[in-house]
Each structure stands twice: as structure tokens, then as C-alpha cells.
Amino acid sequence: MNKKHILRKRIKSIRQTLDDINGNEVQISYKPIQIFPDKKCYPIEFQIFMEEIGRINIVTNDYQLIHLNCPAALVSNNKPEDDWETTFASYGLYKKDESYNGVIAEKIRIIGWDIDNNEYYFDASKIPFQFHDYHDSSKDKNIVEWFVQFINVHLDYIMFSEKFRLK
Image 1 (spheres, rainbow, N blue to C red):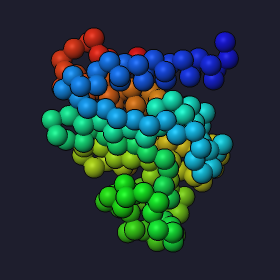
Image 2 (image 1 turned 90 degrees about the horizontal axis):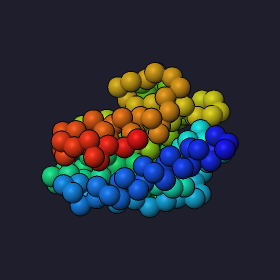
Image 3 (image 1 turned 90 degrees about the vertical axis):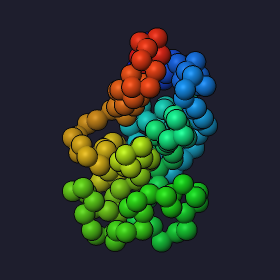
């Protein structure tokens, strides 16, 4: 099997686990997205994640644990296509040549935020775009590995069960 096939199979397994835990103290909604701007510039794991899971919102105890969506430019002259884009703490605060966590703001593609208002984004300075979170700017971060770790850490606090861990 090739890398894409193995990756797609893993992401489908993650989606199935999300379906299994939905409603068990956690509300999960997602909508796969096949097409989004500059899709080929993103790492293959993000492309497949969007195709299989896409826009995802996870809520627990009336708190939004995490929200991920199609990438949106941090700096744009266009009106946001979606209301979710205007909810970012940083949206509209940066000019194109300003620094955003060490990256030129116009190169930032925001994809979401979490319960602590940490923003997740891609640096579009080079191809493939690199995934980052605002508090950890380490390079070569794999979004699927990050997502699995993020969800598992929070599920440990919410559900206290190994049964629902993502793999």
C-alpha cells in the first residue's frame, strides 16, 4: 500500500472513532471538504484530513473544545466568506508585512482555534505549507499526529477512558 492509502485509512479510522464518541459527553460535527484554495500547496495529510473529516467542531460541557475549518488568510482585503473567520482574536488586526509568531502575516492561513483561544495555522511561505500552532512554532509538525494527540489529551480529562482514544 502506498503512503496516501495508509494515511487515508488511518484518517477514516479517526473519523469512525469520532463518530463512536459523539454524544458521549462530547458533541462532534464535521463536514468533509473536497475543494479549497491552494489545496495542492498543503501537506498531503492535511489534504486527506479535509477530504475525510473537513470542517470539524467538537463541544464538551457547552465549551467549544476545538474548531477546524478551511484555511483562511489572516490578512485579506476580501470580506470573509464564512462567519467563523471573523471570530478569530487576531483576524483583521495584522497588516500584510507585520509579524505573526515570527511569520509575515500575509503568509498565514488560519485553520482554527481551541478552547483556550490558541490559533492553528499554516505558514504559506514555502510549499508544502507548514502547520503550526501559535504557542509551538516547531517546524515539520504533522497535523494528523497533532490532532490525535490534542484530542486524546482532552478526552482523558473528559471521558476517563482508553476505549475512546484516537489512534
